[in-house]
Length: 175
Image 1 (tube, rainbow, N blue to C red):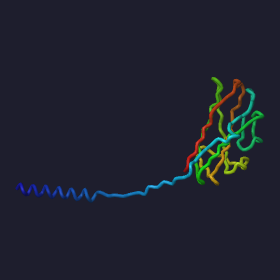
Image 2: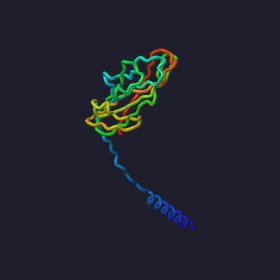
Image 3: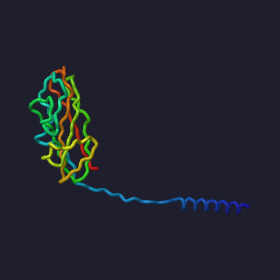
């Protein structure tokens, strides 16, 4: 009887092994990476600040620094500047991210600037550059794309005087 138990136990063990062996499956996947030239985003040497100019603390309406052309500015000072960022890299899609708002401060006082961003593949096409939303894709051609940044400031009625400063952040990554 002991021999019969050992044989039955051995049979159950072998059946268990065969079920484990047949349940095991394998698969594989190819790993790839496309290495592209370095993607850079640099602030232009001349158009290197978002400057609304000198405005009155009693400016009655929204102040608009148009990124396409100064002809569409509203309530700005006489000396203004938009910022231009130059993208350089491999031709193709690049996603652009930037701050939805910029807090401008002077001491304890502040207001919020809303950026306006437009872009084009040629610096000669600033006037017809299309709006670029944060998180959207632009397409580099001839290894370049250009972004111009202006913005709006709310009505300044009774805004305390001072030089208000804020920082606009922008980044880009390959798709």
